Amino acid sequence: MATFQDQLKTLAQLREGQRGKWDNITPEHAARLRVQNRFQTGLDIARYNARIMREDMAAYDGDTAKYTQSLGCWHGFIGQQKMISIKKHFGQTKGRYLYLSGWMIAALRSEFGPLPDQSMHEKTSVPSLIEELYTFLRQADSWELNHLFRDLEAAREAGDSARAAELEGKIDNFETHVVPIIADIDAGFGNAEATYLLAKKMIEAGACCLQIENQVSDEKQCGHQAGKVTVPHEDFIAKLNAVRYAFLELGVEDGVIVARTDSLGAGLTQKIAVSHAPGDLGDQYNAFLDGDEIASADDIANGDVVIKQDGKLVKVKRLASGLYQFKPNTGEDRVVLDCITSLQNGADLLWIETEKPHVGQIKGMVDRVREVCPDAKLVYNNSPSFNWTLNFRQQVFDAWEAEGRDVSAYDRADLMNAEYDATELGRQADEWTQNFQRDAAREAGIFHHLITLPTYHTAALSTDNLAKGYFGDEGMLAYVAGVQRREIREGIATVKHQDMAGSNIGDDHKEFFHGEAALKAGGKDNTMNQFG
Image (cartoon, rainbow, N blue to C red):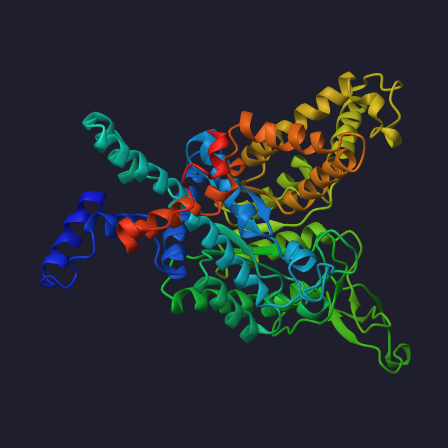
């Protein structure tokens, strides 16, 4: 990217070429605007972030300690504040993304009101949220750079050339808040054509990475609820193709596709796969169908479906819904076949939806996939649908019991009880939880760890705490001590909410446009000055 001085020279030459017609335009102000708006379109963002993700994937292949992370968000402001916080605490955004959750769009962004995660919300709300997130992230760039430019002007006015040079260096080496978003396209919201059309809208809004699942689109269910129905591989491959074509059409040649399999918890399918020869992909899918061997046509009733399975005629189990049932205890085998098939047909990353956070379980499946696809990598849902405390305490309990340790002081069914918080088992479980992402990245091939719904829960928790105090005995102190005082002392930028919303940027623009006649909001009477 061109430096501020390069932009300044270019714009000065442009103004000179207008023979006085642009004399009201100050090249330095125009250069500031250019620097503060690095990305012109969503496709600029998608191409930039696709390269970032590819670099991060390659870095992880070389060192599994370089895994990446993200938090789910349902509003542009939430995504913006996450990235501002990350830059504040860690100095850089490298390896930190955002996740766009279909669950949160359904629950919080639909015009129908709160909905379950069943693809009933408006499909247009998905690209709209991507665009909103990037609007807020780009505004965060403008906000931070605007402060740097104000400091630069102050340094120049004070004659402090060393400080001015330092600030120009920070401006030229500014790290953007615009980071990759892994965006949930559910099961494609329809057939492959519908998937392609929606994928294009999402990419045009800035998405460099789309996550698609192998459930039936019109029966789509939350990954952590019952009733999931998968599709034959041929149908899913068509949707992978649709997403790839969308990326290629729009010039995002290194766009990333995450293929999600829900087969571990899905016991049903809507279709019997088409099979052309024994052992082909359709035949492998159908081999998992549950059924009863038949000896003759007399064993068949009206509406029964019969297939050839391992050389035998089998009447497959069909439910009243018309859906077909898989054999019990075949989930992991189906997951492995799904993953290999997806990677062999255009997917870049995998997502295995599990019922619990267990490194050994994930590793067992990934090891089998890597026998065929050695570079297989996962995106993993560190889901709030898991009871993390109970799961890890039970894992520690089981491990201790297997080692022959005395666990009589603990009730495995009641390990969520607060009385276990300060025990050795409780502390060990917390340590396992703390190390879960590191361990899973190293042992189970997880390149990216995300939490789908964190701000849904944090918003509810913080609101509950504020409401309890404010409407109770604490009154205004509940807000002052619990929110504002903490914002001030912890350096949270939103304490100056007018500035965060762009008032200082607007004041500077007024000066650009009106000159000395600018009527600005940030004078001595602005109460924002009370915050220093």
